[in-house]
Image (tube, rainbow, N blue to C red):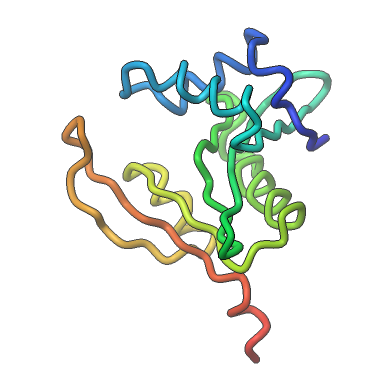
Length: 143
């Protein structure tokens, strides 16, 4: 079940999932928690049998671009469609014109596999390569 979980960010299972998403960045966990506590970002989780197996954090700007800030699935639940499902659920919930995310190489491979266009951005602050991933929703309807 897909549901909002901003109010649950201090629960251990939610914090653990967010830690997977921010592992390289010092202070990033506290910044993420503050973002979702304040309501500046929307945080949704997908529960399966009472356990949150994945989450997606995003915000939608004035141009109707859904910016994915965090997307993570528990390691033992990966490759089962949860990540794709979270993106699709956020898409149907927010009804944006496009979706965008800046991520690492692993994230870029995932986004490419579900139809996003990928652009390399060069090295990030910790030496890792960063990528901008964009999906234009309206392209589906141009036929």
